[in-house]
Image 1: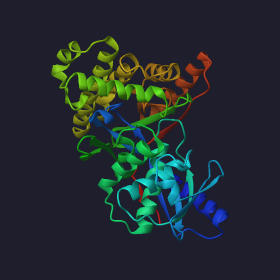
Image 2: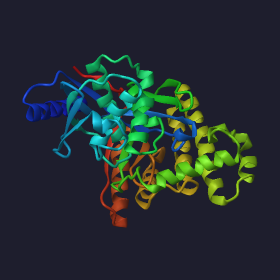
Image 3: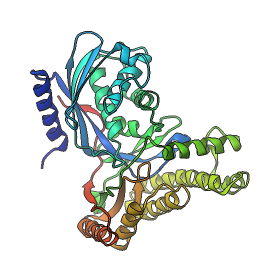
Image 4: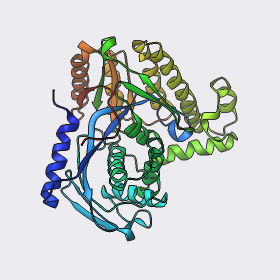
Length: 389
């Protein structure tokens, strides 16, 4: 069986040779992620349950003299150079290279002496699918620079630094989940993350032993994170927390939800709050079932999560809803949108021998609606960022 990380690593090495006419000193890989459950809870100090994908972004790298950085992307074929001047202030490097410059900026802001470096980037994590290609890029580059510079930056501190790069240098208002998954996940486990304390618990998630699989369906409806909709949802949640006089919506207990909703001024805000509070509870309920090795029983929680995202948080699109409905009609035990919304992917919990049936049903439903055909793959929980060699 082909190792996806090794295949993409070979492409990163080939690109490094092509651009720099010498081999890299090492290769560092970081995964995309799927969030099993817990959407838009991370920036509300809540709970999430992602797992890492076998799909990886690889940074092949070597030192470069001085405070200069050169990075090549397989995807665009571009080579971008930047120096200390471009990382003294946020946003001075734009586009895909901004994520690389953002990591250098965040390390320097945290007081680290960042080594100059040459990098070549290759990836199998699809862009715009809600599988966190940006965090995979950040985590791979961060791992490379930490190793090249011998920096004392433990893994548990790395997600917050990578998030700072994305929030403040790139300008995307993401929570801590994506970077935590890319850096801290373990193979065969989901990552139960408390986004306030950053405490993690690795929850066994052995699908094969239960005769199950996770089918990830790319809706091919573009996924947009750095736009007004994501920021508007976050702003709405922060305003609601202020109105309710709590640090974050995570602090609203489920049994006090009705009282909290009655104190809010409009129906839209009430629906946003209801989603976050009930979604936090669904994450905790899912974790309880996984601890008890009752994987099959999480299906209704996945469905309830999707319904809440569709009706209360209003972040789904017709392609996404069609995929969920078709998967459930074809026998999926549960299905939901995963990621920030407005496009991206659906995950479906299916019996292992039923994956193709469900995928074909979704494809047929798309054809009937005149949508661009979806793509799909089955995935297993993989490891977080690592040095390959």
